Amino acid sequence: MAIKRALVSVSNKEGIVPFVKALIEQGVEVISTGGTKSTLEENGIDVIGISEVTGFPEIMDGRVKTLHPNIHGGLLAVRDNEEHMSTLAQHDITPIDLVVVNLYPFQQTISKPDVEFAEAIENIDIGGPSMLRSAAKNHQSVTVIVDPSDYETVLSELSEHGEVTSETKRRLGAKVFRHTAAYDAVIAEYLTNMTGEESPESLTVTFEKKQDLRYGENPHQKAAFYKKPLGSVFSVAAATQLHGKELSYNNINDANAALQIVKEFTEPAAVAVKHMNPCGVGVGASITEAFDKAYAADPTSIFGGIVALNGEVNEETATKLHEIFLEIVIAPSYSEKALEILTSKKNIRLLTIDFSTAAKVEKSLTSVQGGLLVQDEDTLSLDEANVSIVTKREPTEKEWEDLKLAWSVVKHVKSNAIVLAKDGMTIGVGAGQMNRVGAANIAINQAGEKAEGSALGSDAFFPMNDTVEAAAKAGVTAIIQPGGSIRDEDSITKADEYGITMVFTGVRHFKH
Ligand SMILES: NC(=O)c1ncn([C@@H]2O[C@H](COP(=O)(O)O)[C@@H](O)[C@H]2O)c1NC=O
Image (cartoon, rainbow, N blue to C red; front, side):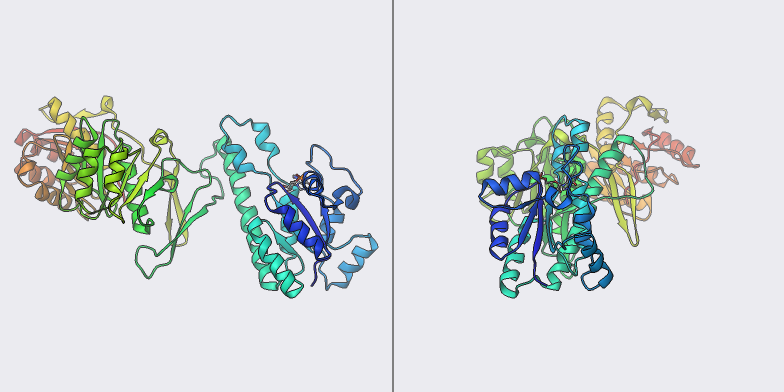
């Protein structure tokens, strides 16, 4: 079916002039709304004004301009339905075969700092999505373009076949419904955030494709990376890659885990992650010292890992990072010399990230077969005023420091989780075990002799006193755990027996 009449109404005017020129050269009659018409006329293109078609002026600051039966009748009439076509004739409505519309920039508007509510509301497009949806519903007859990158395809099909193919019309129609659904999802999120409704009856989230990935968790799995349109700046999705190979699916997951851990710390900190668990965390007076500790925590596991640091990477740290094989380094910035050193390896991925928004929280979404689990992020930090020391002995100042580190890290280790910490670094991490003492044994084993005088953090309570026993035998002197087991007394007695100090936080940090 040839295109005889088109309606063009665009906010993003990129590419519209040459496109409409080409349509007119092919004999297409073009109708246009106010601003679009002015742009075209300024470029020497004569078009039919929308009011000539509707017989009505554009009113209420453009709130109503194309919402008219002369437009929607022309878009929705099924061309091989005799009744539809005679209705058009009866009301003197001309069919519209091509709709070119892109919408008021709602997302860009609300992304501006200090945007006024009234401005946001005025940027909710009503007439545009209505035309897009009418045309997309009737895509067997009508061609609909919402994305300027499709102008070229339509023009080349028109010049090649004299019409747009059915496949293209269907593809463009589907694209429109994705586009209007995403557009509405952003509006819904903006208004829902204002009303503060928790867990509404339906969740309309939308994501934009950031990149196709070479593969998923394994090479036989197809994958892509999508980002939230209004998402957090402190995220892998918003990070800038300065150097190295494209991020892989597993890289993104691991980098995300590293970021969640490093944001726990205000002092210089370095976090090494393998398979989404921290293998080494160090804090110190400088980034170099923090990294030295993160490395010393587990020099074996860091190989092929991801390192996140919360301060600028300087030459000294870069030299050390350069000596080991790492997949990714993430930091707020790199000194010039550091970049020179690190970029001498072709493949290492270097990312920068804006730490100023690290405190911003988002809901966490986890997909399960057939559904989605939504929860608040686990942002609870240790509330020192509300812990209880349940043993006879209180922690020393040094033990407190180690306990705090163990607690900050164990929260990010897959459950059941046990972390041993000493002197500003982790020395043993037991992750993802099906029983708690199993996780403790792994952490203790890894720490070896270093366990002497260390602190142990547990993400959940001790169901029995066996973890305390194992810790005591390894030389652990301080324990931090939520408490709350019916057998807490057994663990407390055991700790007292060995002169261990034990702190109950009253807070559990499972991570599955
Ligand atoms: N109100 C209407 O009937 C209406 N019809 C089209 N629009 C939008 O107006 C914009 C184009 O306006 P102009 O051509 O005046 O610059 C497009 O983004 C289009 O989606 C409308 N605006 C908002 O709803």
